[in-house]
Image (cartoon, rainbow, N blue to C red; front, side, top):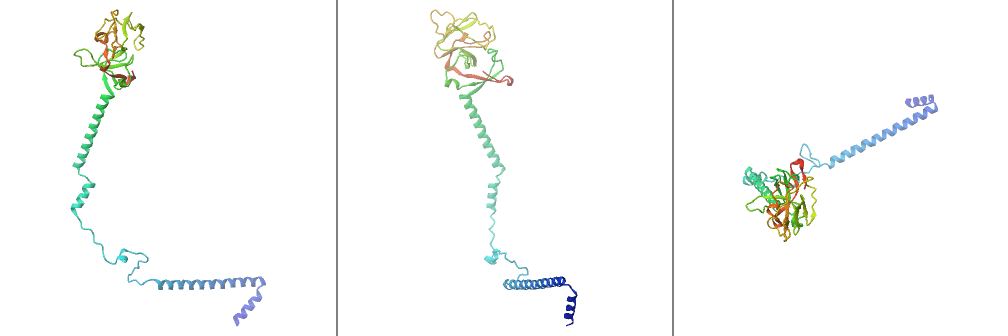
Length: 284
């Protein structure tokens, strides 16, 4: 009663606005207390439910939701496979071959590579290209002594010999074993003769831009294997399937002027490039 009287007296001392504020605070305080009580009751109820649902466990540290193989199959343990030293040794050899086996394999691979390279080189040399060494100055100034050239052996399988080609052929002279390189001057059926220091083919002057200016050529008598007509006392009429060749160094070359026309079947191929010296690589 005393408290209620005190509240009434206090309320009388407050203004209307202050009493309104006091009422608002009181309602908020009551609402907060009720919410706290409801949350505590809900928490206690959930905790009680979890304790009821949790299965009993004899372990001091329960596993929770983890499922192991023992839970499914029981306590039976899977027996480990029996160790087989021979099988393990065989597996090791398969994955780690011995040094002898590796050496043998490497040796076989190298033999295959070397034999294949030699076979390919012989194939190329026989049917496609071959390198030659120039042993004399007979082709100066086109080729010098010591130069190295490549000869295309397939050229005359595809087309006929042309005038001006540099050809490599077997020497037609008896006892000669070396291949020669000369320039084709006359073709089958043509008449080659030297007049006034210049070569004429069937009465026409042959232009030779590969020679130095004012190069004089000495006339020559009819060599062997020519098929001159009765009125052709000098020069050479070239038989079929033959060519007339000369060296570019006309004053120092032994060529068709001495041993006659060369059979086309004796031609090895056409020189098409100088590969040495490196500073003078040139297409011929």
